[in-house]
Image 1 (cartoon, one colour):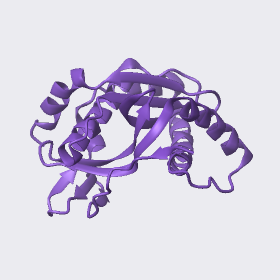
Image 2 (tube, rainbow, N blue to C red):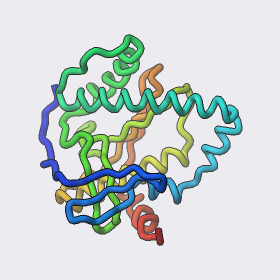
Image 3 (cartoon, helix red, strand yellow):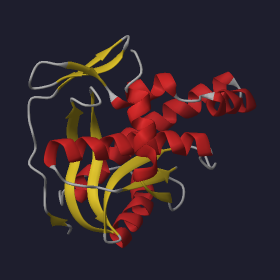
Length: 217
């Protein structure tokens, strides 16, 4: 069981999935694009293009569909587990995959501050939902689970993109709650082995986030 020191949930954030990307309406009525939508337009996707060429378009599409299904399930299970809720009935291969993830969470998470927390920023003019805010090895951290359905390492450009996303959530939490989460933890999980864990301080990435989110949209 994890100690729960939850940030108060601020309700009224409404999500809209459109052909132009994901948007959120804030409680004040502002319509903001999601963090992932903004970063997706400005990120370097050469790693993705290179990977698709290497494995072939059809195989890449198959892997991405599997990864999406796997990712949705693992996110749900992690949300339940960090919230001290019952996992419920799941398939044997899902138990195996979640067991690897559970091992990492049990080892490193000491306290939970928020799970699937809706956030927005009038400064960045963006919004999103963070996987979690936790005490990770004694450090207040943004937690983000990324899923693969193949055995490969994340590319550095890919990881940097994930850390920019976590940095934006850290900035939003500071703006909304006055609470500082200076570390970001990215868990990369393929469901077949113990996940890779990447930890970085967000401070060196704040300026880049401000620059990206300040560009014309």
